[in-house]
Image (tube, rainbow, N blue to C red; front, side, top):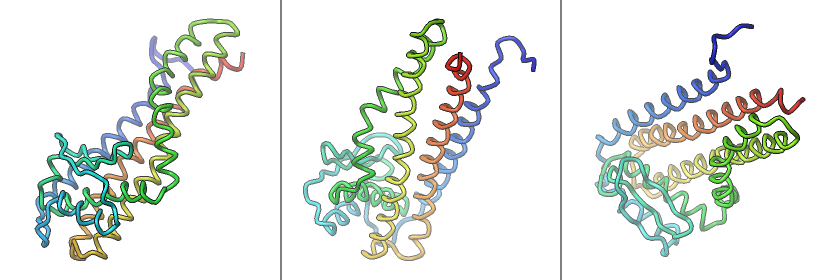
Length: 234
Protein backbone atom coordinates (compact mmCIF):
# COMPACT_ATOMS: atom_id res chain seq x y z
CA UNK A 1 0.00 0.00 0.00
CA UNK A 2 1.33 3.45 -0.86
CA UNK A 3 1.38 6.24 1.72
CA UNK A 4 2.41 9.86 1.08
CA UNK A 5 6.02 10.63 2.00
CA UNK A 6 6.56 11.07 5.76
CA UNK A 7 3.03 9.93 6.55
CA UNK A 8 2.85 7.47 9.41
CA UNK A 9 -0.49 5.57 9.26
CA UNK A 10 -0.12 4.41 12.87
CA UNK A 11 -0.43 8.03 13.98
CA UNK A 12 -4.16 7.58 13.46
CA UNK A 13 -4.16 5.61 16.72
CA UNK A 14 -2.73 8.62 18.53
CA UNK A 15 -5.34 10.91 17.00
CA UNK A 16 -8.13 8.56 18.07
CA UNK A 17 -6.78 8.64 21.62
CA UNK A 18 -6.62 12.43 21.58
CA UNK A 19 -10.20 12.71 20.34
CA UNK A 20 -11.45 10.28 23.00
CA UNK A 21 -9.70 12.28 25.74
CA UNK A 22 -11.04 15.59 24.39
CA UNK A 23 -14.61 14.28 24.34
CA UNK A 24 -14.31 12.91 27.88
CA UNK A 25 -12.77 16.15 29.14
CA UNK A 26 -15.48 18.26 27.51
CA UNK A 27 -18.17 16.04 29.03
CA UNK A 28 -16.58 16.33 32.46
CA UNK A 29 -16.28 20.12 32.28
CA UNK A 30 -19.83 20.65 31.04
CA UNK A 31 -21.32 18.30 33.66
CA UNK A 32 -19.31 19.84 36.50
CA UNK A 33 -20.18 23.37 35.38
CA UNK A 34 -23.87 22.46 35.23
CA UNK A 35 -24.04 21.08 38.77
CA UNK A 36 -21.64 23.64 40.20
CA UNK A 37 -24.55 26.07 39.76
CA UNK A 38 -26.87 23.87 41.84
CA UNK A 39 -26.58 24.72 45.54
CA UNK A 40 -26.90 21.81 47.95
CA UNK A 41 -29.77 21.94 50.43
CA UNK A 42 -27.37 21.44 53.34
CA UNK A 43 -25.40 24.55 52.40
CA UNK A 44 -22.16 22.73 53.25
CA UNK A 45 -19.00 23.70 51.46
CA UNK A 46 -16.74 21.07 49.94
CA UNK A 47 -14.35 21.46 52.85
CA UNK A 48 -17.11 21.08 55.45
CA UNK A 49 -18.49 18.02 53.68
CA UNK A 50 -15.02 16.48 53.60
CA UNK A 51 -14.51 17.12 57.30
CA UNK A 52 -17.86 15.52 58.11
CA UNK A 53 -17.19 12.45 55.96
CA UNK A 54 -13.70 11.90 57.37
CA UNK A 55 -14.97 12.14 60.94
CA UNK A 56 -17.77 9.67 60.21
CA UNK A 57 -15.15 7.29 58.84
CA UNK A 58 -13.02 7.67 61.98
CA UNK A 59 -10.23 9.46 60.12
CA UNK A 60 -8.68 12.30 62.12
CA UNK A 61 -5.12 12.42 60.80
CA UNK A 62 -5.87 13.70 57.29
CA UNK A 63 -5.40 17.41 56.65
CA UNK A 64 -7.66 19.29 54.27
CA UNK A 65 -5.96 21.99 52.22
CA UNK A 66 -6.97 24.35 49.47
CA UNK A 67 -5.14 24.08 46.16
CA UNK A 68 -5.34 26.54 43.30
CA UNK A 69 -6.81 25.60 39.97
CA UNK A 70 -9.99 24.02 38.69
CA UNK A 71 -10.65 20.29 39.24
CA UNK A 72 -7.15 19.80 40.66
CA UNK A 73 -8.62 17.95 43.65
CA UNK A 74 -6.66 14.94 44.88
CA UNK A 75 -5.71 12.90 47.93
CA UNK A 76 -2.03 12.50 48.78
CA UNK A 77 -1.63 9.21 50.68
CA UNK A 78 2.04 9.86 51.47
CA UNK A 79 1.37 13.09 53.33
CA UNK A 80 -2.21 12.20 54.29
CA UNK A 81 -3.45 15.44 52.77
CA UNK A 82 -6.75 15.95 50.98
CA UNK A 83 -6.42 18.90 48.61
CA UNK A 84 -9.52 20.59 47.26
CA UNK A 85 -9.48 23.01 44.36
CA UNK A 86 -10.95 26.51 44.25
CA UNK A 87 -14.05 25.07 42.57
CA UNK A 88 -14.61 22.67 45.48
CA UNK A 89 -13.10 23.92 48.73
CA UNK A 90 -15.38 26.82 49.60
CA UNK A 91 -18.28 26.09 47.26
CA UNK A 92 -21.69 24.82 48.36
CA UNK A 93 -22.74 23.23 45.09
CA UNK A 94 -23.82 19.65 44.51
CA UNK A 95 -20.77 19.21 42.30
CA UNK A 96 -18.37 20.52 44.95
CA UNK A 97 -19.77 18.25 47.67
CA UNK A 98 -19.63 15.26 45.33
CA UNK A 99 -16.00 15.86 44.33
CA UNK A 100 -15.00 16.37 47.97
CA UNK A 101 -16.73 13.10 48.89
CA UNK A 102 -14.90 11.32 46.07
CA UNK A 103 -11.53 12.45 47.41
CA UNK A 104 -12.60 11.32 50.87
CA UNK A 105 -13.27 7.96 49.24
CA UNK A 106 -9.55 7.76 48.44
CA UNK A 107 -8.68 8.61 52.05
CA UNK A 108 -10.96 5.80 53.22
CA UNK A 109 -9.34 3.42 50.70
CA UNK A 110 -6.00 4.33 52.22
CA UNK A 111 -7.26 3.73 55.74
CA UNK A 112 -8.65 0.26 55.00
CA UNK A 113 -5.71 -0.80 52.84
CA UNK A 114 -7.60 -1.04 49.56
CA UNK A 115 -5.32 -3.22 47.41
CA UNK A 116 -5.66 -1.45 44.03
CA UNK A 117 -4.77 1.88 45.69
CA UNK A 118 -1.64 0.31 47.20
CA UNK A 119 -0.69 -1.19 43.84
CA UNK A 120 -1.19 2.15 42.11
CA UNK A 121 0.96 3.87 44.70
CA UNK A 122 3.74 1.36 44.15
CA UNK A 123 3.51 1.88 40.39
CA UNK A 124 3.78 5.69 40.49
CA UNK A 125 7.61 5.97 40.39
CA UNK A 126 8.11 3.20 37.82
CA UNK A 127 5.24 4.48 35.67
CA UNK A 128 6.63 8.03 35.69
CA UNK A 129 10.10 6.74 34.82
CA UNK A 130 8.70 4.41 32.19
CA UNK A 131 6.69 7.11 30.41
CA UNK A 132 9.79 9.36 30.37
CA UNK A 133 12.33 6.83 29.13
CA UNK A 134 10.17 4.70 26.82
CA UNK A 135 10.30 6.74 23.61
CA UNK A 136 14.03 7.58 23.82
CA UNK A 137 14.76 3.86 24.15
CA UNK A 138 12.43 2.97 21.27
CA UNK A 139 13.87 5.66 18.97
CA UNK A 140 17.41 4.50 19.74
CA UNK A 141 16.32 0.94 19.04
CA UNK A 142 14.87 1.94 15.67
CA UNK A 143 18.01 3.91 14.79
CA UNK A 144 20.52 1.13 15.37
CA UNK A 145 20.63 -2.12 13.44
CA UNK A 146 22.19 -4.60 15.81
CA UNK A 147 21.45 -6.95 18.65
CA UNK A 148 21.50 -3.93 20.94
CA UNK A 149 18.56 -2.46 19.03
CA UNK A 150 16.42 -5.44 20.01
CA UNK A 151 17.33 -4.93 23.65
CA UNK A 152 16.52 -1.21 23.48
CA UNK A 153 13.18 -1.83 21.76
CA UNK A 154 12.14 -4.44 24.30
CA UNK A 155 13.16 -2.19 27.21
CA UNK A 156 11.22 0.71 25.67
CA UNK A 157 8.10 -1.40 25.24
CA UNK A 158 8.40 -2.69 28.80
CA UNK A 159 8.82 0.85 30.14
CA UNK A 160 5.76 2.12 28.29
CA UNK A 161 3.77 -0.94 29.35
CA UNK A 162 4.34 0.00 32.98
CA UNK A 163 2.82 3.42 32.30
CA UNK A 164 -0.17 1.73 30.63
CA UNK A 165 -0.53 -0.65 33.57
CA UNK A 166 -0.71 2.35 35.90
CA UNK A 167 -3.58 3.79 33.85
CA UNK A 168 -5.45 0.48 33.98
CA UNK A 169 -4.97 0.01 37.74
CA UNK A 170 -6.24 3.56 38.26
CA UNK A 171 -9.69 2.61 36.92
CA UNK A 172 -10.91 0.41 39.82
CA UNK A 173 -9.42 2.91 42.28
CA UNK A 174 -11.45 5.79 40.85
CA UNK A 175 -14.68 3.84 40.36
CA UNK A 176 -14.48 2.46 43.90
CA UNK A 177 -13.89 5.93 45.36
CA UNK A 178 -16.98 7.22 43.55
CA UNK A 179 -19.10 4.32 44.82
CA UNK A 180 -17.93 5.02 48.36
CA UNK A 181 -18.74 8.72 47.92
CA UNK A 182 -22.28 8.11 46.71
CA UNK A 183 -22.94 5.63 49.51
CA UNK A 184 -21.61 7.97 52.20
CA UNK A 185 -23.48 10.99 50.89
CA UNK A 186 -26.72 9.02 50.85
CA UNK A 187 -26.32 7.43 54.27
CA UNK A 188 -25.21 10.66 55.95
CA UNK A 189 -27.98 12.74 54.33
CA UNK A 190 -25.43 15.32 53.23
CA UNK A 191 -27.29 15.35 49.92
CA UNK A 192 -30.94 14.72 49.21
CA UNK A 193 -31.89 11.89 46.80
CA UNK A 194 -32.53 14.33 43.95
CA UNK A 195 -29.12 15.92 44.54
CA UNK A 196 -27.42 12.52 44.51
CA UNK A 197 -28.56 12.08 40.94
CA UNK A 198 -26.59 15.15 39.90
CA UNK A 199 -23.57 14.05 41.92
CA UNK A 200 -23.61 10.63 40.23
CA UNK A 201 -23.51 12.33 36.84
CA UNK A 202 -20.54 14.47 37.87
CA UNK A 203 -18.58 11.51 39.23
CA UNK A 204 -19.47 9.32 36.25
CA UNK A 205 -18.20 12.01 33.88
CA UNK A 206 -15.02 12.26 35.94
CA UNK A 207 -14.54 8.50 35.80
CA UNK A 208 -14.89 8.56 32.02
CA UNK A 209 -11.81 10.81 31.79
CA UNK A 210 -9.79 8.01 33.39
CA UNK A 211 -11.30 5.47 31.01
CA UNK A 212 -10.36 7.73 28.11
CA UNK A 213 -6.83 8.10 29.46
CA UNK A 214 -6.43 4.33 29.74
CA UNK A 215 -7.83 3.82 26.23
CA UNK A 216 -5.44 6.43 24.83
CA UNK A 217 -2.46 4.78 26.55
CA UNK A 218 -3.45 1.35 25.19
CA UNK A 219 -3.74 2.78 21.67
CA UNK A 220 -0.28 4.31 21.99
CA UNK A 221 1.13 0.99 23.15
CA UNK A 222 -0.52 -0.70 20.16
CA UNK A 223 1.13 1.87 17.90
CA UNK A 224 4.53 1.15 19.45
CA UNK A 225 4.05 -2.59 18.94
CA UNK A 226 3.13 -2.01 15.27
CA UNK A 227 6.09 0.32 14.67
CA UNK A 228 8.60 -2.02 16.29
CA UNK A 229 7.06 -5.32 15.21
CA UNK A 230 9.08 -5.71 12.06
CA UNK A 231 12.36 -4.80 13.69
CA UNK A 232 11.81 -7.18 16.61
CA UNK A 233 10.98 -10.03 14.21
CA UNK A 234 14.15 -9.57 12.14
